[in-house]
Length: 219
Image 1: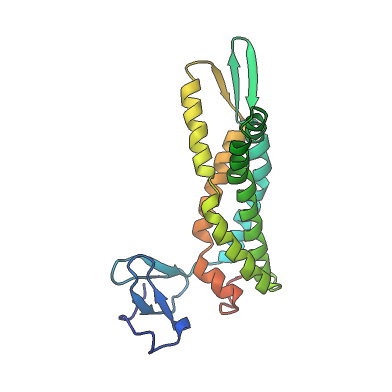
Image 2: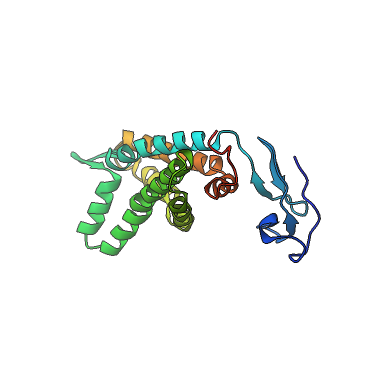
């Protein structure tokens, strides 16, 4: 693991050669890292950036897998509830429609945006960014889309929705006959793949590739 230099003044080096720690604000000179290595802050140990192997290929595979899971996760049944002879099948899209039909249009809009629309927009932005790097076309648009993706990151709340589903299952399992649907497993798989994608798609390498600094990013 390479060690970073001691703090430097902004006047001593060009701004593009400096990096500040996100945790403790220590200002340092950027140090090149090799494949599989990472740079850490010498003061607090925070990981500043890393260089992962085949980051574009691996990220593309994960994005495509997430997009394939998106439709079944949102439209296949999450659970089937049998109570007093009545059967109800719930899906994520059905939950949005049910909230809207019961007069809670605002809540329905928030659920739709945070659990369906924004996660899809994030995946599409990631896909287009990775394709712009992989195919070496439209990198200026890729920069714009990657900025948009970073603004959307805090609005996609699949994990919050999953916690709501699990709480509902725990509360309903003692009141009625409850069967878990395929949609829930697809939803959990989608969430796990998105977390994996966040780890794999190293921001430092993506920014470098979009700016043309890392010619090996697509390897």
